[in-house]
Length: 120
Image (cartoon, one colour):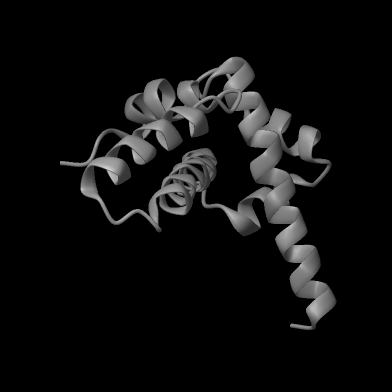
């Protein structure tokens, strides 16, 4: 696959994830339909199913990206701390700051456990 094709493929995937995130935050997982997601993303239904097995797989990708963003922020803010107490305090502050991103609390703490469950 050429670089421009890979870039277009990644752009389509990101457009789907961004559109799905907006709708999941606004309406919740259960009330969001795949035709709404593809319309919001400006892509075809076939593009959705090329990138994701189903709506749940798309939701899981959105959740993984959100969780990674939170973890990255915590890592960034604590990586230079040598004292455990300071690392803990900075990590907690980073978590709360990261969770202030609009919709993130709903996605990670309300929707995700209901849709994909909690790890055993």
